[in-house]
Image (cartoon, rainbow, N blue to C red):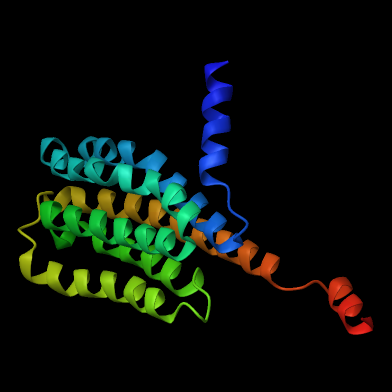
Length: 195
């Protein structure tokens, strides 16, 4: 009973007719729900220094807020998604060091910025693309030494590549489905031509 009420509350507060925001909601929920496990995986791979990745937990509420913000303003919800993705990647790079390959997670953030904004949303799109690029450059100057030993970096890189691939594929799939919804089908296009 409580679960059904929570589910109803969630649906009411996050409902949107915007397919691009629905795609952003899916990405945000995937990242927000998997984020608590990320530092645990890093600790398992590289040991105690991996607890530095626990800064990722601080941004989990931002990802979970994306559907709520997107309910009020779709463009703001998608900007929040790219901002949260940039922030979590930046914070983890600063803590783990650039050799830990975390910077590669700017790729799905850039993909969201490139694929989930309409042509008329040039300002938010530019911001969504500029944030991860600026964070990458700034992170190169501020990042500390790598916390992982060289002998364990290969495993961190391998797991990072697997996780990154999953995120990129999910973002691409969500964007493809959203854009397919935005395009009129051939049947509806023919009906419009007749009228």
